[in-house]
Amino acid sequence: EAQVTQNPRYLITVTGKKLTVTCSQNMNHEYMSWYRQDPGLGLRQIYYSMNVEVTDKGDVPEGYKVSRKEKRNFPLILESPSPNQTSLYFCASSRGTSGRMQDEQFFGPGTRLTVL
Amino acid sequence: LAKTTQPISMDSYEGQEVNITCSHNNIATNDYITWYQQFPSQGPRFIIQGYKTKVTNEVASLFIPADRKSSTLSLPRVSLSDTAVYYCLVGDAAGWGGKLIFGQGTELSVKP
Image (cartoon, rainbow over all chains, first blue to last red; front, side, top):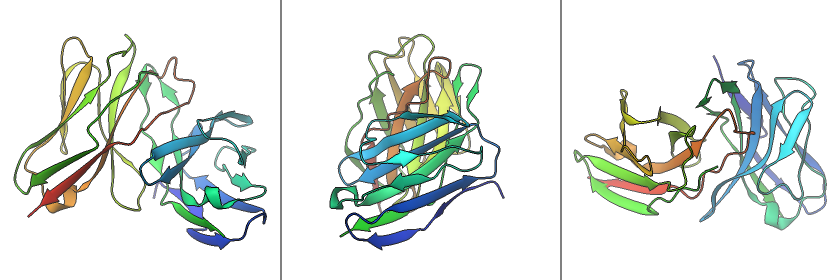
C-alpha cells in the first residue's frame, strides 16, 4: 500500500532532551516536507526537500533540523526541544514537479508531540 | 506564491450544497489552484485541482472564473462526514521551489 509513515505517533518528552521523528514513504517520491499544526494557526511548513541531499527552510524552521540521506526517509530532529514545540506534526511527500502542475501531496498520520 | 483568503468557518446542514470561496488576487499566469481536506487529527487529503473554468471529480467541483482571482469549491449534498477543514493553495510547480503555504483553511461544520 502506498503510504507515508511516521514514528512515533505520540511522544511526551521533557525540555532539552533530543528527539527524532521519523518519516518514510514507499512511493519513490522526490519531494518530502514537514509541517506543524497548531490551533488557530493552520498548517505551517517547517522544512522541505526537493530531492536527496537537498533541503530548505519553510516558514518555521527555528529549533528543527532535517536530513535527506536517502529518497524514502526524511527525519525531523529536535536537538533541544522546548514547550513551544508542542504540536501536531505531519510529514508529506509528493512526486515532485510534473510539468506545470502542483503535485498532490500525501500526508502521514501525524505525530503528536508534547514537550514538558 | 499567491496569498489566499478563505472564510474561517462555515455551517451547513446535511443534504445541502456547500460552496467555499477562496480569494487569490495575485495569482500568476502559471499558477494552479489546489484544494485539500483535513479531518480532525488526520493529515490533509487532496481533493481537486484546476487551472481555469470548471473541474469535477467524484468528490467535488471547482469553479474558476475567467480572471482567476478567486475559486469556489463546491461540495454537493454534504453529509456529516464532510465536516472538516478545507484548504485552498495556489502555486506553480515550475517556479514552485517547494515552499507551500496552507494557511488556516475553512472549517466546515455539517449539522444533521
